Image 1 (cartoon, chains in turn brown, green):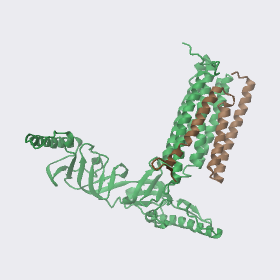
Image 2 (image 1 turned 90 degrees about the vertical axis):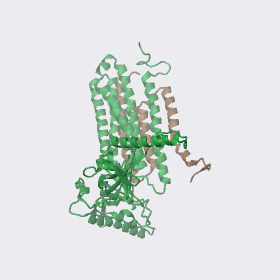
Image 3 (image 1 turned 60 degrees about the vertical axis):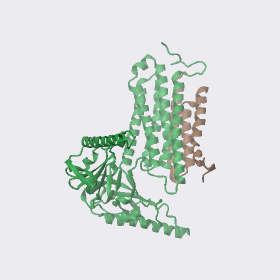
Image 4 (image 1 turned 30 degrees about the vertical axis):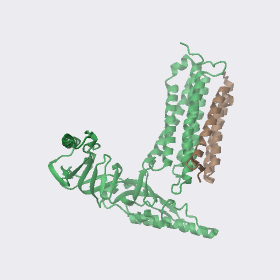
Length: 99
Length: 467
């Protein structure tokens, strides 16, 4: 990829703006947690921050299809991992969902 | 040999080698941390379903975590700015930004070190009625007196208990048929071995004789040899040791890790586990109905009967106030707070909810009149009522287990990432001059890893510090 000085200046601006947005989101996370201990809101803000970092800093806004494929599989299986806990709710001895 | 697609992208995928490599590596890293996050969810949901275990919340300093989050976000910006400087072929500026990234990493790790240090020096005791008390400055010295019999496991004996003997170690004699017999000797691992082989030899001979008589047809196995030796000291002795280094402690004896069992009585000088500067009481899982009937309240304010216990904890103590006075203040904090809950509930016409009160910091409290009362009372918990005690490490609860696993692994990533970026910034000038485009690719790959480290922390901060 060719980087002209103008393009680089433009990128530089974007990166600083994203950085400021990330800092603002961090403050927001703390304020929200102080107002209400909502797990969902906290995680939603964190997910948005992760998206910002991936999209801009890790250049996923303009990446090759192969990288997207790798990441699609990864995200799919990583989200799958989060639901493994559900297996612990199932009791194989009496074959029912424990309460 | 020239490796293809190291600098120029492969035409069909549009990727150079390292780029594909780092993304595959990051994919594996996502799965690694994903498994641990899944473990976190499991433990937390499990805690919610458990009636006597409460997920600790608010135990970490939010300002500390907040500052570390800011530091990592800034370092993420710095690393992309450094990469852009390489694109501009400005090595000096690149070094400057990279230096800032490494500095951020160092500050992050130092902060983490302070946080870990605080946890390692904060203790909790779980009492036999499931009430919990937390504080600073623990002393778990236990002294046994009048020890007149020692049983040792021949195979495991390591002689460590001799180091705990108060004064000179006594001489011992073997106990045969309930009576001390033979010569007195100084106890050592070699001596135990020689006694064991002597007894084994005699037993083997007796076995052989009985075999020849034809009464038995079982051969000799080493497992048929002597396993335990009972020894009697020439005079009763005392030991003084940290309770944590014992395998088990009984009212009438102590078992060491090598299974040596010493029979004696717990000294009045060390009646229990001493915790100085109690700062939190957690009665949520307590068996008793009323908080004031819990064992914590029963023992609060007790001071150890001998002075050596309190040594080294001076910074926590207010010399003008006795332990009993401290306990009285702590009680006032607790019961005033309870009264406030009752009054507020009465005003609102609701049933009073004491749940928050059952997990209360008694360090400081401001009553509605604006009066501030502070207290950090001492406590001596009799050994029989100590169910578990530990500093805030994985032993204490599953929260700290997952906290140290997640943050420890993340800290390792910060350290290694910073080491790689330091190498690019300050040890790679020749590489840059030889092939700047190739070098820029390397920096991009290092930067991608650094962003990943930032991503993990973005999730860790809310789930560990805020929720």
